[in-house]
Amino acid sequence: MPLGFAIVGAGNIAGVQVEAIKHITEARVVVITGRGEENGRALAATAEADWIRDLASAVSYPDVDIVSICTPSGAHLEPALVAAKAGKHLMIEKPLEITTDRMDSIIAAVKEAGVTLTCFFPSRFMIGVKKVKEAIIEGRLGKIVLADAFVKWYRSQEYYDVGWRGTWALDGGGALMNQSIHSIDMLQWLAGPVKSVFGLTQTSRHGMETEDTATAALSFRSGAMGVIQGATSCWPGQPAKVELRGTEGTIVLQEGRIVTWKLKDSSEDEELEMLSLEAPLGSGSSDPMGIGFEMHQRQISETIAAIQSGDKPSIDGIEARKSVEIILAIYQSVRDGSPVLL
Image 1 (spheres, rainbow, N blue to C red):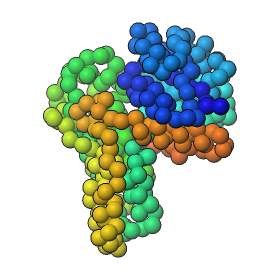
Image 2 (image 1 turned 180 degrees about the horizontal axis):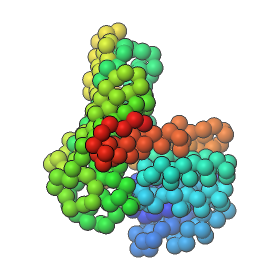
Image 3 (image 1 turned 90 degrees about the vertical axis):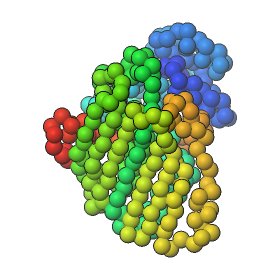
Image 4 (image 1 turned 45 degrees about the horizontal axis):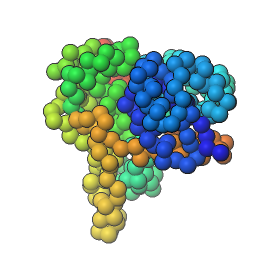
């Protein structure tokens, strides 16, 4: 019997999830809930699911096993608490939440309820990203000395005029918290825990509360150094990159695809194989919906398998917390004008 989903929210990313679930035989959308009735009903029709405005009624459906939260970033906690209390497993779009206290409340509620929690970071499910992780674990880059993430994207003013985007209350930040968080998560997962950050931010071209341009210098616990640059001010926008440079090799990922694989112990055949791995199906560099559903599909499938086996998904609450903690430290550094230790 397929596991039933209740999707909270009916915006763009909810549509991506609906499309992903359509391609998973072990899953089906049972009900859509949220504040926007017109969009909600339209999405429910697409998913061949019910539409209910009331959250508590939606999660109380007996055939709902998983609640997936697609609300604005600063509105994840409240539906997560309702779902956990109802004994439902949770999938939450990034970020997990926008403050450490709110993230910790979700993690505690899930632990108390004994349900499974995962947070969406689909980039980790690219084959190339997994190959890079394997190479790092095997020590093939030697000692990593530089680890950088560059997200030089573009968003129009209309993108921010919807109201909640680019606000502290509901977006939790700007180009770092909303767009760059995928690359920041990948960077910390690949290069290891971040030790300290020193950040600079500004709002270069948009009418918004938060930053559309940011730079941060990082030190890692391993001794590596790095840079994060995140922006939505850079027309026309370029694919995001994560660059890893070590004493024995260099690897560069572009939107999760390996574009540089230069390792001292690598053969020419292996290099060609790594460069020929799957390409991302689109990019969010200039269009927030310029992405595919396939990596969501992989993460949802992994979570279903974890629920069925009693295992922990690869990106649980503790793991999802790490990227937000880095971003919050950068914001604190900007406010204080000094480095911040994590």
